[in-house]
Length: 65
Image (cartoon, rainbow, N blue to C red):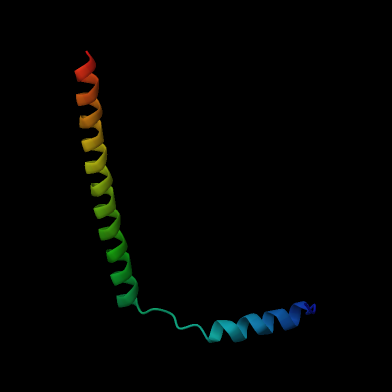
């Protein structure tokens, strides 16, 4: 890989940055909302799984006592 000088590197970075299509405010807010909804759903799922496994373990331990 060929080495580039710092000036060339900065020029290439600016050139690549100009190609980026940045999301609009609405797109960003929609994505943030979707992330929050998914986090809540996954947290609820794991809470319910943990609750079920806890009840199962307590049931199995009660059989032996």
